[in-house]
Length: 344
Image (cartoon, rainbow, N blue to C red; front, side):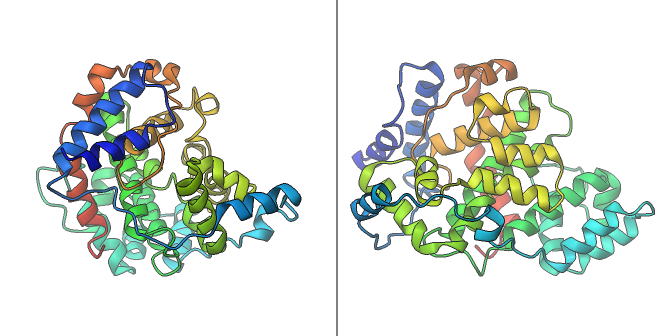
């Protein structure tokens, strides 16, 4: 392992005490992963950019706190849902919804139906026979599960043309997919029913970030300047720059889009172990986000080290068992990412 890879890991963990067993376990896994990834694809790739002077922003902030002068919804316009999702939502709410009609709606969007079938036929499910049609997928997996997968994958693709360069799209998508994959694997290891719902929740847990950055790309540059020049974790910086954070924003908009409360909670609470304690989906996504951030999957954020030990204890995850749960995660993630986002 080159010094640069080790330095990356040390910097990512610079804000946390390594005498906490779970932090130390994640640190050791991160070192091992970077050693293996040195010859292959590095999910931690981050686009270089010209950043403003963070000192000037801090000086201005002290003189004139920005403060929330409008409601969140007035400050940040809610993106319109694609037609296919509006129709899917309406059909699901209908008392007479049918498998055939749901499949027809999903198939109206070629990329969505292709991504969905690729996902259903991927290593995530391992069906013995190839699933050839969306209608067959619904029959095998159920209306709710297929619709949730379709909804979440299409939600992520909404930002392909609007996400600013300050948030490289592939980096964001890789982190989202990694969190989804780890959440699914954790749910299976913890014997949770319907592990795919945890995949969906992990996939959209950071949906507030592209919304926030797309609304204020110049302010997003200030945020990254605070991170890179001052060593400030992004979540802490978001509240300083925007007076809100991506978790609050994601939870708000997922609720307005009509997603289940468990998915809303996972987005809203994935940085708050105290608030998500006892909420099963939010707990799994909290742990999955901790793991993916610590190991550098699709992000260059600091690992902020909120281990929420009571959550890990509730789920029965120990430092020793964590490594086994993550066996082969890089290879699985590459397959899944290529299936759902073939053009990235």
